[in-house]
Image 1 (cartoon, one colour):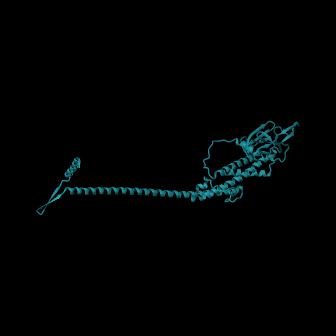
Image 2 (cartoon, helix red, strand yellow):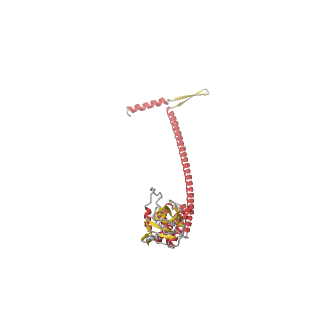
Image 3 (cartoon, one colour):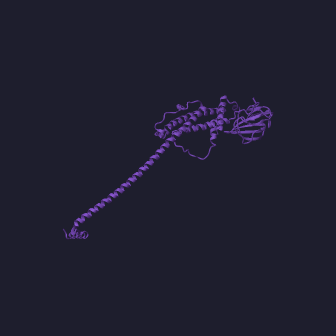
Length: 393
């Protein structure tokens, strides 16, 4: 052992001797004195045991405190988890209830739509409505409503309703297209081109662009086609009602037709732009179609005149009147009285001069006033529909 190590050991021994010197305890009992000697080794051993006991106690205390904190934390976590489970259960219950309520509400509305279809388009079986118009479901249509909600058992009523509404939309589109085609055919019977009328009407559109916010889903295509078909039917039926097919007066016969004739005043060849209806003085003159009065007053050669605009470039003129029963800007319906028969202007006697003009050009009124029975029936159906819409509104 080196000298330095020996010196260190000796120093340690000296410090221990200073801390734990050998001690002697004197005990006096019954006049006798006893000596108890406590050695340095015993003192060191006792101190070591005491230190170990203190350290062990401290360790146990710390361990107990840590365990208590962990238990409290676990309890708090369990309480939070319990509250989350209760909240989730409440949400699920509310979700199921809302789905059931929504399904019932949609079913009621669907029943109403089926009844509405039966009333206006025939008695079809509501559950089978449109079955012949719907092809098989496409399995790869991942964005369909059925695919989105079929994973939830409580959504089964909505899946059935979605399929039912899809069939209904297709059936209704088909029925509306048939009805629109009938209106288009009726318009052609008057010598008018429904496509040309639609192009003229398409120019008069506008408004801000507001994009459709609905999601692209299984019903979107069917609803778009339905909206287009309804828009076309609406335009064609309104155009049909605007065609002057109603008799402008109760007179049963004509005194002068449209086209070539000899002028009644000078006998020269002349062009007659309308039809002449004889009658009694003061007899009612009626609007031949729905429209708005655009002129009330006198025109050279015509005398007293009422003119009615019917839209799509169609205007009717009622001339030689003895009096007026309408004002400019007034909306009139087919058959409304707008004037009285007379003989004003360049006239040889009491009669009505009736003209139909398309985009300012005179056309023969006879085809308008001699509409076929089936055309009149289409007009009556359209009239009833618009009257029902007004009543509901």
